[in-house]
Image (cartoon, rainbow, N blue to C red; front, side):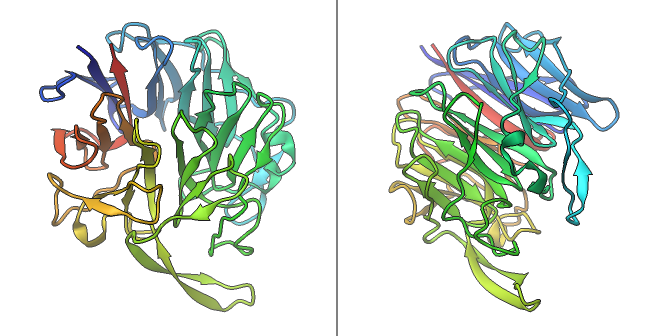
Length: 389
């Protein structure tokens, strides 16, 4: 029988939850690395027992951990992340030049075919790669060096490269997203990159349709259609059907809010905006079924009306239904962060997400009903799921 392993990174350590294919009874181990922030933890598709974790604290800095036995034991590996050449500057919050400074690893994306190869998205934004199971890391410098790096500016959480999507049909193609610089694609293994932001509109920017500067919160794709991308932006949910060359808004009937932002002439304008949130994912077997967790405004960061709801679209966007069975529908003021939603690949696709209140919820029926696997973890930063044979 198949098994499911859930990897939860939290503010105070890592936790590993496991169940059989029925997904009714769960075991939990942890905290691994107690007291440390685990920004992300993910397993290798090529070797499910090979796990990588990004471990960080404000006191002791950054560490990369590796497990070869499914999280039972861990060992620290290489932790030297050095920008190639003269790093130069990016823009600071006030628009002044600021030197590139490595702070932490936000996201780890193992290769689809080699357990020793992993990509790391870091703050300040750059992408690194290891081909020796984490012993050494080299920057893929074409991203920062393609010409717009000096225009990148941090979002509220820092200048972080938080999304890495690998195209299973084309090993030379990869997508990344940076808050708050935008989205980029390489078609030659990282040697060159192009911004893929046409069709995005960000009212808080001086030029709302500029090529660089959009605050993208997360992106997702279905492996059977790697040219179709879904995006959760600072406001709005979008999709692209041509590998990011053009985006269209599919927020539809998602909950909305009003945003007041300065106009070019110094006045302010009020915008009716929809679909603010961080997490987005795609059903394992239905490429047009996508999930988001709307939250209120770009400052309050909790569910509208205190009701925790996942929204599902079975049409690739625009038409959304709230999914709330088993979720708190009053006095709930948690958030769901960008890497805190994942899916399994069992026949009845399971959906999982973690909250800043320490809950990890699971739905074994594609979102129709929800159960808390655990309620009292530290704030959840990331959730990844492995389906094991």
